[in-house]
Image (tube, rainbow, N blue to C red):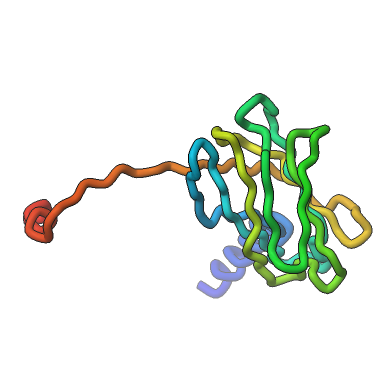
Length: 159
């Protein structure tokens, strides 16, 4: 039994190296529709990289009308600007202490589209503007229709 557990543990260490786990992530928090535009709110996570995230760059994979970012907002300590050359947006920390360090999640990022959703090539860069990682991120805001129902109507669904 001990030999079997030892073999299983060894296989698990070989098959699941720590480098295979995500180091950085963009997490969609919510969406808001205002007129014909969609605002997408998201967070950025540095799970375990010893090098902090100090810049973030979104480039549409297919920059067609409707998939181009028309506005952005940044959390405190960060700035953002539209990138006309790519149709995307760039965020940067204003000071080194505002970078996103290992084990940290930074909320309050957003971008505005008019009106579609698409996928982006996201580039995470460090304090010297060195590329730390690139990954595809796709955003979608699915709005679900609702009907006004009484409590009795809801209870009848489950009887």
